[in-house]
Length: 576
Image (cartoon, rainbow, N blue to C red):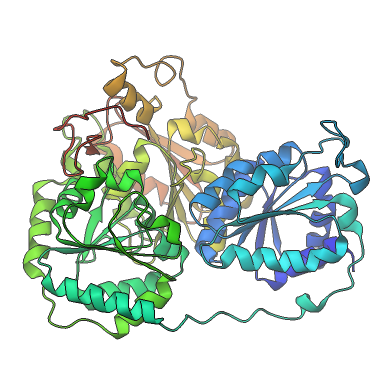
């Protein structure tokens, strides 16, 4: 069998239903084999970065590695941002790049390049992948392809890259066994003695706590432990705060949900976290955007129990944690089956609800004229119950969305967290929509980030995907503008000065997508309803907000996380 045929059939064998690509000479054999030999849907994007982000969205929703293809040279290098996004946010993905014939590779020659577009993508991608391999021997292909899929989903999920010379793609493969053998699912591990001992100590300290909290991190989703986690939280009855990447692990209206914590966390959530006397951290790396710069204040005197699949993430920035390295499924299965008794935290839960009433998210922008972005998120949520997912770009709108979107139990929230890549939302929405059987998806972007992959409007139009595109237009790069306001005496170079954007409704209409724009708060509800007038059709809504709107509350850098702007001022310039 030709190697390209083998790859195509193997992807189908691993339940990959869609691959995302931008055509190029070095992947034409792969595309032809996918078309001729399989039922895999080939989704032609309009930039390789868009293909990579679409694969990321598909992989996050499906739990199966997302697959993106790109040709050699610029095609491969254009994938790197999406590869990095998958790596930092633990998304399973397999990236396949075409490479020049083996006879055209420079090998050890002291030259920059031999073949046209020859580029050593493996060396470039290696630091941001779980593995990156140049498949120079056809007989290695079956083993490496299987290893790529296994590695992408094992332990902490992530991306793997395979670089395939064109002549290898044309070579004959005789080892077909892996096409006939379905890898057996790996059952959850039984609780180890370390897990049992950790849980016993956790329960003992929990019994003493008056104000316990669970901090849910993105590892719950990437570890495919969401349902177990919800069962666990309800069994314990302890309030749950969450990181940005865990915004969808517990529904917004669940009585135990206590909100977003961190740099731009809900004010009541950060206060509650500061006052808590016990913290159980599940699948979160406790980075600076969650804890703030004052790590000693974050730790305080309370016990922090930390569970993660990677040992290096524990006692890294926050020292003195009682840690357990294991898969969350293992821990949650054991803990839920052996719950502590006699826990009642109604007074603490009521206190958090009082803080929520005292510091509503919609009051953070009360003095800003025009449409309140937090109000927008609530109104959008109420009209978007049929959406299967929200994809959020990077910027101030990302924070407003995480603070205020009302996520239902069946909905996902996808955003670029660790890498923070602008341009993520629109292509990720394509992948999420296709992974969710073409159920509607809401894509939220700022006017700046939207322009990075605006060309994928054509992909949406071509496939008539039911993606509702919300462009929050503050006519600037708002997150950095806010940074300049704080630290550069409001010198707005390149955020306001020198920045511009097109008429987004006209652009959408040029792609054949219905669109409208809204500025008046009184017209906002009707404008959102217009998005859903044709539920299975794409639509773009431009929401104009004041350029001066800031993402508040914001942790005052260098101070404890309960002290937040605009009421508190940072001690020093933030480094992240």
